[in-house]
Length: 299
Image 1 (cartoon, rainbow, N blue to C red):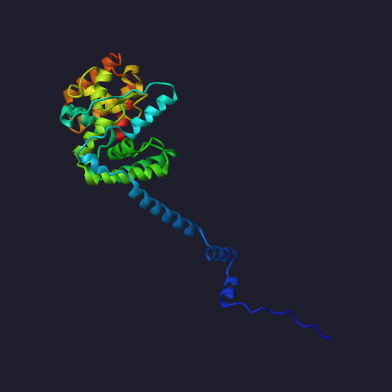
Image 2: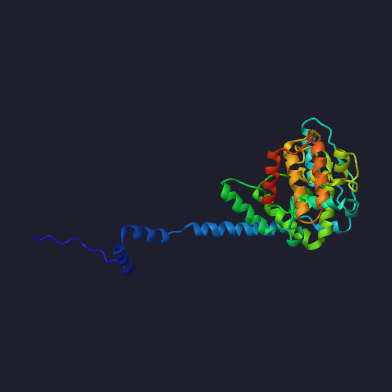
């Protein structure tokens, strides 16, 4: 009895075409036909949008700041809890002053150090974000932060100091609300009155008296530059301890103020000389000059 040939299962035109492709192409077709990362990314993005919408409704109403100053801030509360956890008594030094009661060059120093484009953005400086990302990629490590002064204010007033993405999302939403409901001058006034300037020291008036024994109105150019230079690490870079990092940062800020026309060349020379006296230097070392030039060029 003759054997029958093996049965041949009919294949679809797509299967026949796939078989005609090279092995690598066939794998790509099979990969594309299965659920990929695109769906996961879309799902994640959708969940993030939903989360932002829910959190937006739950955010504090910043419009209250239009008529009254905050009695306290999230940062002050957090620092008090940290002190109590260490068995210490919380310390709070703060005195509210209008912007007109602060030396103009001290305000300029803060803006130059923390947010040079403050008057050009609406809460988030996307140009600075792009520059920070490019620098991080170029150096293969996380570089400088890109938070605007408004974002810092939102964090100090309402959030914590943790570095989670969820906190950052809230910070962005609050910064946009602050820019919508408050003027730039009002935001700047709030910032210089609540920002941390040492352990238990909040605001520029308390900082001026704590670190230099003077008022915010009477701050010299060098003193204003030192206060501005403290801000990235206000509890570590204390003038009384005379850290070299603070000396370098303050010198760079003075140079920047001169280039921007905020102070004259004579004021810059006098301020640099005051820095040298404060830090116990008869002259500025070459390494410091190089560091100042480098910081100035990167700003």
